[in-house]
Amino acid sequence: METVSIDKEIIHESNNSIIYKTKNSKTEAEKIFKVSKQQDLSGLYNEFQIIDENKSQFGNSKIVFEDSKTALVRDFVKGKSLKQLLSEGKFGLAFFMEYAPKIAEILFEVHLKNIIHKDLSPGNIIIDEQTKKVTLIDYELSTHLRLSEAGNRLSFDLSNNLPYISPEQTGRMNRLIDYRSDYYSLGICFFEMLTGTTPFSSEDPLEIVYAHLAHTPPSLTKYNVEIPVIIDTIIQKLLSKNAEERYHSLQGLLYDLNKCFVSWNFSKSIPDFVVGTSDIPAQLHVSQVMVGRENELQTLVDCFEKSANGEKVVLKVSGYSGIGKTMLIQEASKPLTQRNGIFLSGKFDSLQRNTPYSAFSQALDLLADLIMSESEETVAKWKSEIADSLGDLAKIIIELNPKWEKILGNYEALPSLSGKELQNRLHFVLGNLIKLIASAQHPLILFIDDCQWADDASLDFLNKLIVNNDINYCLFVLAYRQNELSTSPLLVHFLTH
Ligand SMILES: Nc1ncnc2c1ncn2[C@@H]1O[C@H](COP(=O)(O)OP(=O)(O)O)[C@@H](O)[C@H]1O
Ligand SMILES: [Mg+2]
Image (cartoon, rainbow, N blue to C red; front, side, top):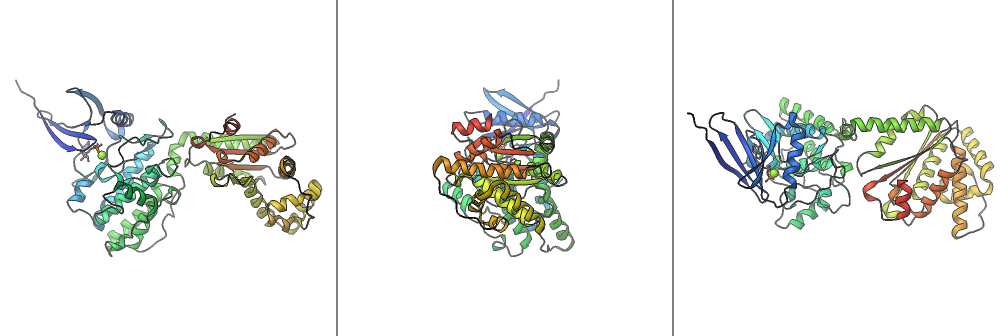
């Protein structure tokens, strides 16, 4: 009888896990057993769940119990980790040009599955130098957006991959992690693929954290003058502290990398060009929201349609930071231009809570610009309509924003009021102005962003607008970040009811 033996060898051991490779002597099948060293096995189960839900892409996996240990079993991926290749001295421009686009592509595929990897680092990228195939592994920290929107798992030992984490992953930026966090980590990996070292390294973990938050990464040309400036530009863009300043989409990055690749292959040099020209804002969102987003967009368009037909519609859009609410709303307001609609927006700011009405003064500012860009005739028409409606109180608009004097002309100072009376007068004036603008000729979308930071006076005013039956032809879009709703019961009630 033929005997089948299973060879077993440890191929990796870290603080987090031990990885065994096994080989079946008969079938030659090679498997990986990942045994967690952590008490908390949630990472291992998380990885299993993510792989299992995306079998077609990631292959089969299972959880087994062996020697009273829990292990995740996967197929062995041929090749070496990027970490190992780097330690063997494999880095530099040619190496980068060969593999960087492939790594970006593989990350793109992962993002298309709505997965943020969150632990992108050389140890988690496997490269088969024979076939040139790149595989991304280790989904312990990853987040499947539909499974957990917030996805802010920070319960892991950050010290592991500290040089690769994004500023927002340090937990000190008061913002949630989204797919762009992976762009940052990708930028660090790219940096290392070119120079053999990460931009921020130190013995002291806190120093690394601080550098991610505050230090500008060194220019790549400092390490190697042969690195084209454009590559430096691309990587610096990925390494922006602020997620908004990184690429918005991996297509945008891939387009740029590909341009480099083509020049490089042709002439072993890469000229400068403008980066980000094919960047599509919120691209992962496109997939993240593919179904949802289309529906949400439709909801917005429907709401606008209703308001354009004379209704007043209030739409509260909740979501986490960085999921593209603003984009969504801007997108939805496009058909509006065809209907002479007016799109005004303003946002509240966490730092301006003590300056009441900040969002409304921004909207007022936009409106002034809009009116002033019209013909003299139209400006005069607005002027007389506002004068008719507000009389001397039009002065209040000028007080709120002096730009308006150009439209409205001079007004006498008003008797000074204080407290509630002052507030009421202001609400009356702004309410009337909105009533005047929002009309069958000019349906209005008033988009107020970051309502979680609204001051009490503004909330009061918003409430009045909403219940005011004289205001029609108007869509109020009130966006707020679910995760940052403050503890103010008034605010929570207002936004969620
Ligand atoms: N499926 C696999 N195929 C080949 N090598 C693997 C596989 N899974 C893990 N490894 C090797 O084990 C190392 C650690 O695996 P990983 O899942 O990243 O565990 P950890 O959570 O400890 O980082 C990888 O860097 C890689 O060298
Ligand atoms: Mg790993």
